[in-house]
Image: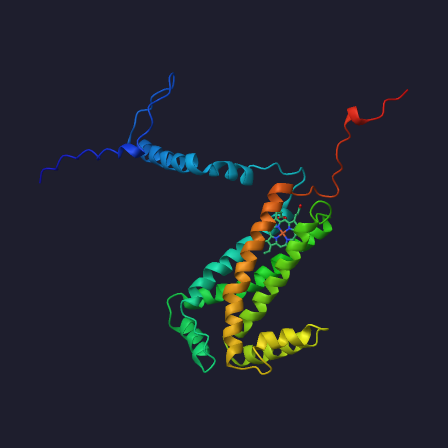
Length: 270
Ligand code: HEM
C-alpha cells in the first residue's frame, strides 16, 4: 500500500509563537521541538509579566548557603517531604474512611487494606510515614540545637518549629485512634487520661478531646476532624512561615567554622 504523504503540523496559535527577534538577535530555525519550547517560554513569560512571580522564585531558590553546609542541613527538607507524603497518602485514605464508631470506621479500614487497589500500600506508607516524620523532625531539631542555629536572629523560627513539633505529635496521636480497633481504642483512652493529669489545663484538654466526660460517639469524629482538617491546616501555615524565615535569614554556618578576619577591620599598630 502506498504510504500517505506526511502532513505538516498545524502552525502554533499566534499567542504562543515566538516574539519577533530583537535587532542583532540570531533567528533560530523552528522545528516541532523548538516550537514546543518556545510555547512553554511564552506561557511562563505571560504569567510572569502579570505576576512578577519569577522574582519570588529567584528569591526563594537562588540563595547563598554558608561554607561547610553538610548533609545534616537536609533534615528539614526531609521532614517537609515526609509531611507532603503524609498529605498525599492521607487524601487517598480519606476517600474511603468513615468515622463511624459503630463498626463503620473499622470496616472501612479493613476494606482499604484488603480490597482496594494498592490500598494496603498507601495505608502502609501513611502509617510508617507518620513514624518517619516524627523521627525526622526530632533529628532536624537536634541539628538546629547542636549547631546553635536557634540563636539570634532565629529564635522565632525555633518557636515556630517547637509548635510544629507539638502539632506533629498531635497528628500522630489523633491518627492512632482512627482504625478504631481494640488497640487504637484502649491506647487512646490511656493517652487522653494522661492528658487529663496535666496541671490546670489537663482536665479541660481531655474533656475537649473526648467531646465530653465520657469516651463516646463524638470522640472519633472529633479526632478525625482534628487529624485531617484543623492540624494539617495549621501545619501548612506554620511551615510557610518557617520557610519564609529560613529564606529571609539564611541558614547558620556550622559552629566549628570561624568567620575570616578582615584585615581592614584589624586595629592598626602604632
Ligand atoms: C514540620 C516540621 C518542620 C519542617 C518541614 C522544617 C523545615 C525546615 C527547613 C527546610 C529548614 C532549612 C534548613 C535545614 O533544613 O536545616 C529549617 C530550618 C530551621 N528549622 Fe525547621 N522544620 C520543621 C520543624 C522544626 C522544629 C521542630 C524546630 C525546632 C524546634 C525547627 C527549627 C528550625 C530553625 C531554628 C531553623 C534555622 C536553621 C539555620 O538557620 O541553620 N524546625 N526547617
